[in-house]
Length: 197
Image (cartoon, rainbow, N blue to C red; front, side, top):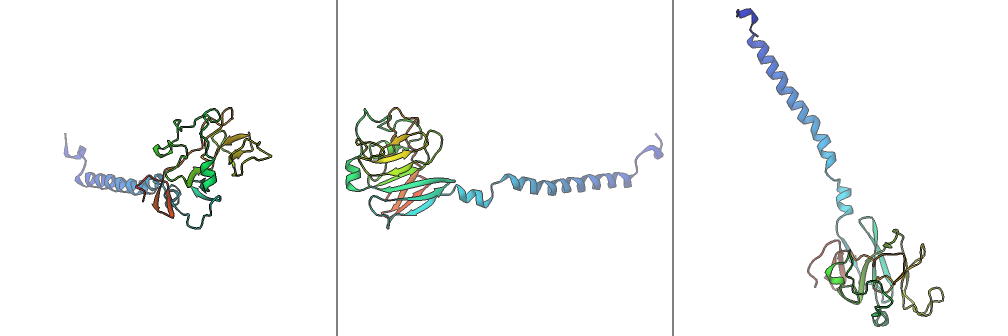
């Protein structure tokens, strides 16, 4: 082979520099694309735990906050509401909360860490409607045997004061209890399990 057929050193140098510059340009072009794959600050905060101050919540009333785009109810039950919490296995579909979507601390008739405070996702387990809070017993609308609880007007599902679904209702299981814990006697953190005070 003659020297005229061999690529010149200059051509090799220019080819190598072009390849290196193209590789660096490709990396810089990928950075914006890869950054779109990580969640935004808004998305991160949407799934972040929510702190709820229950110090001003009066017995018998409830508060609604938003967590992960869903309503979370905090009900401060009265002594009468706690007393009226159903134990009747004939009325409830899952009285011991053994079905899915139930944290360990819901495996009691109050479905809560502290019987005075009930924390639920305010979303019906049938089709995702938002049930109404109907705490008064013996309602003309819901019947004289009604002990208070939640009623979904969309398809008629009834839930007791612990969010447990009545038998023969369209809703397949109890209202979901989100992960939560008490950071103090007046502050509830919704969105993660933790040590209670």
